[in-house]
Length: 177
Image (cartoon, rainbow, N blue to C red):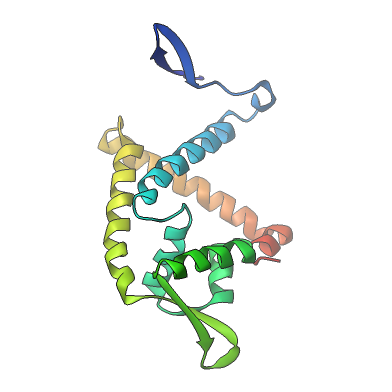
């Protein structure tokens, strides 16, 4: 069931997306999901680069646009990333003028993060980039196939989320411990 995508180079066919290695023969779906996720992230990175963002930073901004000011610790928890990764993202976003950090008036030991008013223009650009990413991702699928892909991915995500929630180690990793 492996499909190879080829490109013509100087009259010879070079594999752009090689088939799975023998070690993943018993996990072809997992390998395919991994490859697709990597290619999707590359495509997103190209679109986001034009906005001055690195992949992942748009998720921080989306969270702030949707939720308003939040404690940095809560942002780290909701992102499910290492605290140092989120801190580095916030430093870059702050330098670009997209976020502002300051002490939480309710607890001066905590830091609040919020999207700046000037980031509102970025919001529309991120929406447009994600719309283009959606077009690229679903190219070659008809509407029914796109809807079925979404349904199946949501089902897979639900299974993985349920499994992660039941696993103490996964919960600890998600909490940034």
